Amino acid sequence: MSIPKGWVVLRTVPSSPEASVLGAFLEQNGVPVHLEQLGELPGLECGAMVAVPGNLLHRAQWLTAEQHISEEELADLAVGLPRSEAEK
Image (cartoon, rainbow, N blue to C red):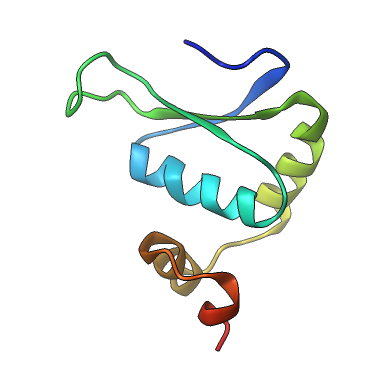
C-alpha cells in the first residue's frame, strides 16, 4: 500500500469503479481522495481503497453517512457530468 503520509483509509469497496464513484462524490464536496486498487494484477483485483486526508476524515464520514446517493446521481457521476449539468 502506498497511502500518502497523513491520509487514512475511509473505506474499502468491492471494485475500482465503485471507488471512483465514491471518490468523485467526495471530491465534488471538497474532500480530496487517493484511490488504490487492491491486488497486484489488473483484472484480478480484490477491491479498492478510498483514502482521505486525516484532517478531513470526519467530514468524509459525515458525507458518506448522511448523503444517500440516488441511482440517478451515481449514473451522472459515472459518465462524468458536472454537478450543475446533472441538476438541470
